[in-house]
Length: 238
Image (cartoon, rainbow, N blue to C red; front, side, top):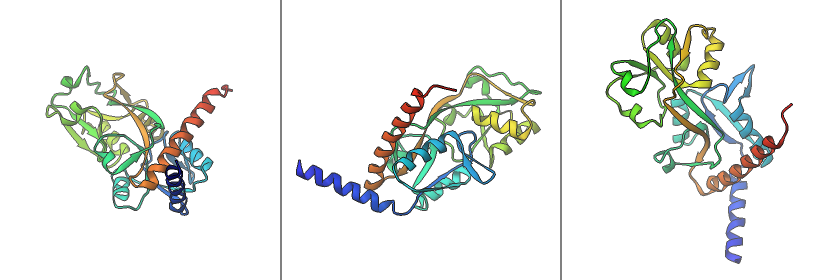
């Protein structure tokens, strides 16, 4: 018992030392989950994370970068955490995921209303050109590996929508809420629509570098997220 107590105290002390500096977080602008507006970072997942960290007394700083750049910053040790990332076995080699997800997402195929391509299943995408995002991990393995259609990268979601309207791709795979929010911002909501049958569903997480200190911190953040969610669920909507 004494050894276990000492070990727990050492972990807590290490965690405090590790976070004398702000926790360095990176993510991609992904409204409405995380984005910047008038110089202020907003978004449901960011605000939930920020509140949990504040309750734990952990200062943080967030940089919004293109997704591939976010992954590089994390991999090269210039970031301690990455916000709104999908969880998979390969990533768990170098990342410790906070076990409580921030939210859930749904990836759907957007199309131009002038060219309403049908979609029933992946077989109906044969010979089509589908716009995707570089660095994204799509949980639908058949979509990732199929050779029946072309997956074409674009530097941003806005660029993907531009290619869609120009007819350079047939459809674009984007998270449903992100796609609708962006289309509204771009003023093209009347020019696009999406297939209601999703390609995949994924939970979004906060992941930290896999070190003993951050593993301990991930447990604390997960517990705080569960507490926050329970409190919000118990608060009557106004």
